[in-house]
Image 1 (cartoon, rainbow, N blue to C red):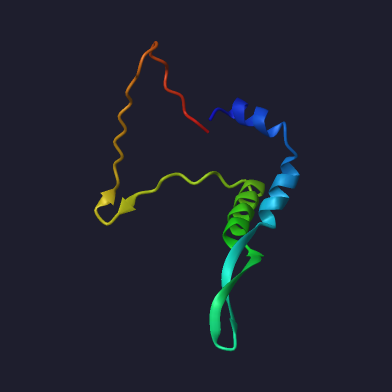
Image 2 (image 1 turned 120 degrees about the vertical axis):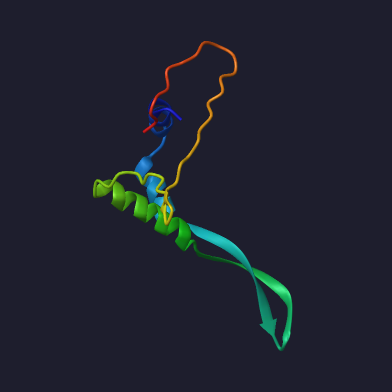
Length: 101
């Protein structure tokens, strides 16, 4: 997605409110209700979604602290990992490759 497209989409929303929703995210799960040894009943409960909360918090603190987005790293015991990328054009005029940031 282009930066300008992201800016256009985000300009239509309250970004701070959206981040606050992520930082307080919850999930609804189904649990067994055990009463008198019988666990045939199930009940839905709302619990914090710590994975979403942690990911949002890590992203925001990395941006605040000026940490760049992590690049793909692939140095193993046998040396760096090599990635081969094939670019295939389908129709239209060839375009100049651009680095997406």
